Amino acid sequence: MGAQHGGLPARQGVSPSCVSLPAGNWPTITDFLVQRFPAISRELWLARMAGGELIDEFGEAVSATRPYRGHMRLYYYRTLPPETRIPFDEELLYQDEHLVVVDKPHFLPVTPSGHYLQETLLVRLKNRLGITGLSPLHRIDRETAGLVLFSVQPKERAAYQDLFRQRDVRKGYEAIAPWRADLTFPRVCISRIVEGQPFFRQTEVAGPANSETHVDLMEVSGSLARYHLSPVTGKKHQLRVHMYALGLPIVNDRMYPPLDPTPDDNYHLPLQLLAQSIAFDDPVTGQARYFQSARQLDLPPAP
Figure 1 (cartoon, rainbow, N blue to C red):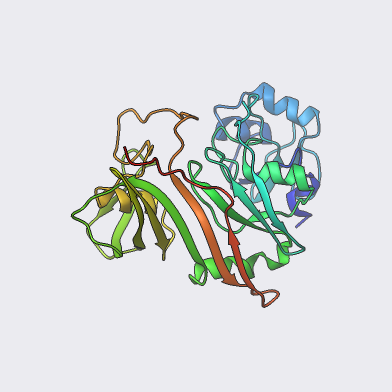
Figure 2 (figure 1 turned 90 degrees about the vertical axis):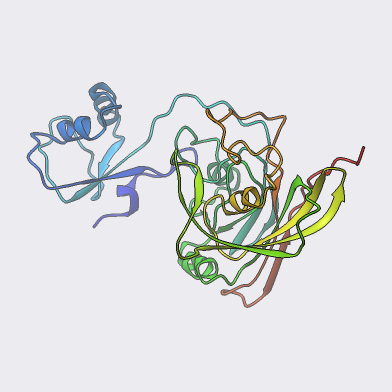
């Protein structure tokens, strides 16, 4: 096995993509790639090969006529149309040789996916800090603002990620949502959350619980209130689903309650959900770590 990424360096903060070649009888590697990725033209693959941007796991450039061979990895750079900049900036809260802690704005994805590549928190930070091995230790929704932690040293990443897997991290969120006089707090929401329809929206179903959130009331202002949310588990959209199930949909949530079609982003109406605090015992240094977002959700004054 050759070097990671076949020797291709990160480009503009983005690591090369990887494709594994299965057993098969394609005449050339080019023929396989054209069939495997129908949205990518043969001409684009040939241009990548001509530019030395398609490399095998041993660091050897792949030519247009190279015969197919299975059970091997190829590395290449993704190509996306020019991205429109998301007009909000992340704030670097803390950095040492082990961790980077960032205050993420609303609307910015944590990692590349779909149409987002350069306009992601991870790629912005790699370009800004020059740390090629930077890796997120957890995720928050693109629409959610607040704290995101990154590991600096690849060899330490697993120790930090184990904290999240073992639920040894204490996370606090704030949300602005309707106030209901008939609900008492604090309360605990426990349910089973699974992928719904469409696939990007989650839903609660009967069955063994896989999610738990503690909800408390902080302050009330007219028909709205500020809530403190403490997730015990980390299911996708968990806080948004649990608040909606309580009849307290988070202000400006485009998905809960479900709307068809789902509204586009509106930069003037950010989701009123903030990853506000995070605390844990550092498995590498032994320190008690506590970080708090500098952002704040504004609760409108009562009329």
